[in-house]
Image (cartoon, rainbow, N blue to C red):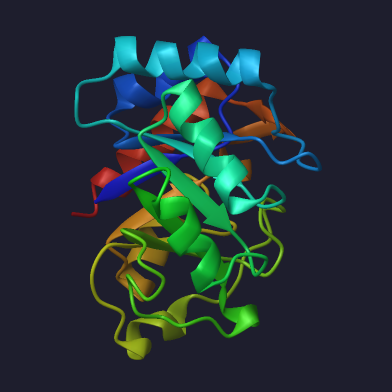
Length: 206
């Protein structure tokens, strides 16, 4: 099971995720998010991830309020390996424009937005399905996802915690999972022990 730990701000959080066996870490640069960081912190996290992980670790820039090309330029400048364009702001044309600047794109959306559910519909490498309020920790009923017939590299997100991730995987049968608020002691503050528990719980399913 592929596991992404998102919203990381510190070197210690990076080490906790990598040491537990996470496949990806995410850095948020949305202006309105409790997990948002500036370029200096993002650079520090990227460098820590490169130093702590192996060549297969995905280091993902997450944005929902920047122009797609601007975000792609930022991802390239700061050394990210993937760019996650999150939300209904981004249409197929935005992905096409971003792809001219930065090669590896992820698309993150919610079923509430009635998105195309084919992985790669906008040219993205991976698709992330989130709860209606991303980053809120709000859990949603993912049991019906298995009936939608999603295939390929898609990740389940939204309200996942170390205690419920195994059941969510069994119900939805995703290719991977993504967690942020579910491993926090307060909004934007990662609980290092919870990160480890989450990654191990998810990995134990497969």
